[in-house]
Length: 270
Image (tube, rainbow, N blue to C red):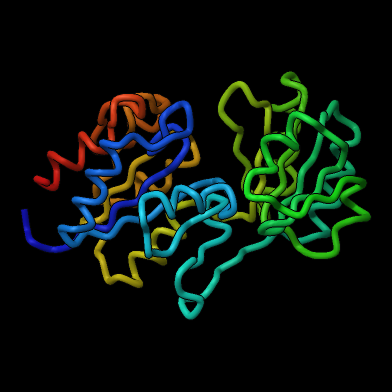
């Protein structure tokens, strides 16, 4: 292997994290070995920073991080690196909420970095979103929001998800991108058009001057497509969805079997 650094991008849920949301000792050890060998490791996740920062600290990173699937990219240890926040227009957000009122929607959440707006009170979701202590405001989002948002989540009845998604594609295709969360959640996540993990990863790669063929990216879900395609070495986890496996250059073991450690050990001869 050429003796030049690789940029290694790690998705969190279903990838670096085991199903119980912990990082295995073996993964930590191999990631540390990769860093000791001069490689650069970063996290690229759909999560907000507040619920990924504990993992960033746990593996001792000092690199920029991609959050909200690319809508927010910043360097937690270096403010001068810049923060890139790409938002959804408040006017569009309000239009979408008006339409949701006509569908069976359990809740709508809007996130502005670390402020979370709940349309309705919701114990179950409050629990999921209280990680990292965001400022939470509950009540009609159209009245409570005063600025453009990072992302919107629509928690809908299962049979309504596709209808809402086709409305988004028909009416707002120019301005929004939307994805469906993995089961068991019937959640539609909406961010600004053109935002995805590869946008953030490209920014980080440029900063470190790393060419595409020396980028290794790991993922398991449909929000990893662009990143896996962008990276010279796209690796799908053994537990990844089939569509991602077909796009990847390599398939490793599952997140429960230390897939990342297994691949890096062999590929980078650690």
